[in-house]
Length: 316
Image 1 (cartoon, one colour):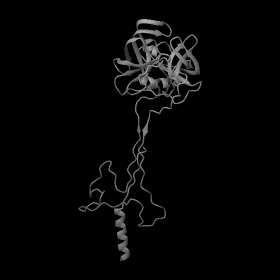
Image 2 (cartoon, rainbow, N blue to C red):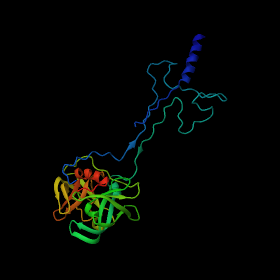
Image 3 (tube, helix red, strand yellow):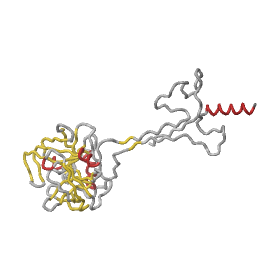
Image 4 (spheres, rainbow, N blue to C red):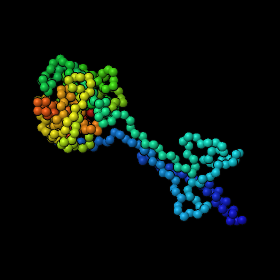
């Protein structure tokens, strides 16, 4: 009789000591400019990790505690133990039952366009009215000119060439998918690096990120832009021919640039040079169609100058 009472007492204690375990959420004219730092991937996957209750050990006999107890629901009219629903009542959706580990959360993946589709969504046409220096035709007075830029942040930072915006009395930016142009202001420029930073009003813009490693020669590349002032986005392909080519011109003084053979016509100035996954390798700024040569400002120049432009500094 004493043995029987002891077993009943142990069984009741096992019911009262049900446990569950939950894991926690684990959560650039100056050639001496520094080397760009690595940039994170946009896509982020956030996963909640939950640990199940410990499994029963092999060889345990009847009556031994194996973690959370699988208690029977109380009879009608009986008070339910703490944490158990009353008899006849079904648990609500998402409610964790005693003795059962919580269901694992589903991973959350960032939505939106990716790769070259993202490039199309984040590449903008820039239309300016004023006096400009065109790389092919020289100084043009009181004219309307068009070039390309690309958005680099969700709050509307736009990177382009200095020769696309310098001299503009008015500046309008056409963002894909928007029915009308958006007004923008030029934050700062670098004449010698042929770079300019503009700012759109608003948030939630699609944006491009920079590549985290220097590209090897022979890398397939794409140049996005709005050639000849056309209102539709275009994309041309090629390969990286030189990773360190001379980039001196009469309108800029970039010491080292990327040379590629994509057929980028006038209007592509300021457009992104990207890889197939949509990450930026450089900013297109010049080309020679007679020799099938085109040039882009590399990230070793772009990134250090960009940090100064964001602070409103005009870089010589």
